[in-house]
Length: 430
Image (cartoon, rainbow, N blue to C red; front, side, top):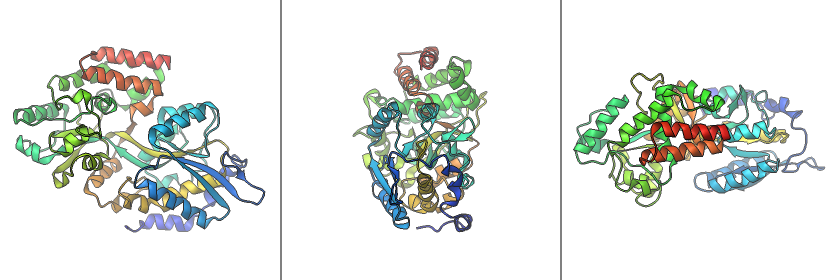
């Protein structure tokens, strides 16, 4: 396991576990849904996470046990749920007005709704160690300049490509602009190579294209403004659809892509892993899913950021993605924040060594050994802007409409203008 960077060692030596949560004490003095302070002086709190697969399935309980061993007066009551089951249970719990003390969050629209309902603790003044975290990892949990969550993982979407298939088509370097990208697609097709693998059935992978194109054409401020104005009919959003249609018209996807899943047999990841397509637009988890679903491309696998668009205001350093974090219910025991500090700062090396997470602590990217993760982490470290997945950044109904409408555009059922109108209607009704 890689050693802790010197800056972190100094920081951890200078700071006691409880020193940073003093300002939270008054706000969180009451009991929590995990029972809070008991008569015997013990404190219990609930922790809901989605660690049902490795490495989190083994690692998360180890971290909780280590914290409890160091603090015998604290009991952590852990509930681990599969992603969709977690979301369903948390939605029901949120509706009842009672959240668990510590719970998984992806930030964005759902967190905003919980904050607006007065259910989530504002951590801004208590998070004195936020300067140890990368700014990009914190963005999804910041609302109106306040911080409501603590990240433990961060990632970005980009193009994963098969170097051998690029060489077969005479492509010597990854494309930097959208025009160059379309030219690469044409060259791949001419060489008898399927350019792109896509899970058309699952919809969310397709929304990555429209979202990135909207970022590159209209720019990040336009996406943020649209969330406020609830109007996605601007020319930049229409143009994003026009550019996506340019790609779709080249018929770049694998045969029967509209019925393909992502991680299923014969799906997007398997098509890519088996060398039957040259590219896929996917998050940092892509190599491991390719390996699980098919084969490991090894040194033949490369990564490049989403291209810029000529005439667009977006920059290459602005990235699209998301990660994982934890939030506290309003009134959670102060020890819950102590646990999050322990989880994130003191266990960053373990999280990275498990090869399942990307760094959120400044400088920790130097600990990565996996070549693909190094590339993604390096891009994130240099990022000049960050946009959360649109189906998480916006209210759930709006995010779903983005996925549905973009899928319809890719299937030839909607025009670029119809896509923006449908998303706008969903936003105004949300």
